[in-house]
Amino acid sequence: MLNKIEKDLISKTEANKTRNIKILYWGMAGSGKTTIVDTLYRITKENQKDVEPVGDLTKISMSSGATLYFDRGIFRSTAETKVMYHVYTVAGQKRYSPLRKRIFKGTDGVIYVVDSQTHLLEDNIESLKELKKVSEGRLIKEIPMIVMLNKQDLTEVISEQIFKQILKEERLWYEPGDELSLWNPIIYKTCALYDKKKDIYRSFAECLRRTGLYLLFGNGQAPEKLQINS
Image (cartoon, rainbow, N blue to C red; front, side, top):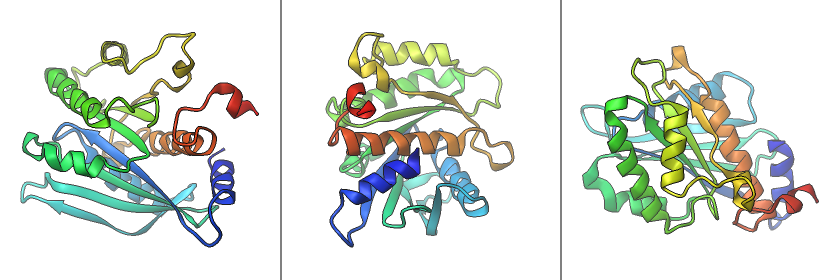
């Protein structure tokens, strides 16, 4: 499905031009965004997937290993080499709020990373609220969103049901009958550590698929079901 979407995107792109798509990992400090991208890089480098890394990851981090400004990686479609995915993470510390707003600019798809430790629930909600504010109401309506409940290998973790309720309270989940319910965020239970990796590539690929559909059928907005079927 992803390769078909990419092929159609290229057919609608000016000849000899590259189609650049920006994917952003957003989440509170320490939620595992950098580890996710590290693992994603290894998965796509060591295995045959629909995308492959181009060059090395760019990291600007503190001595503690926490992201100072952002991480960046570039991935290329293996089927359509003119489709490039520019993947960013944002620094989660509160003092970098202005920087996060700048990095968000031009984002085509968002993967929201939750630190699943139960005692951090409120911090996750605060980060989600900031993302909503920065997006200016465009999440789901114009920008597809995927959720990763990360660190599910730990004990005392936030459940899918609890976070789904949070999404509802933040008006980021639509009830059946609403056209946007088709694009409700898929919630993945993940582990970012390479040796324990779970759904790292799967969640990324789904974000790429949805982003491609928004660009292809919705002209940058959530496409209607009839548009996709046609």
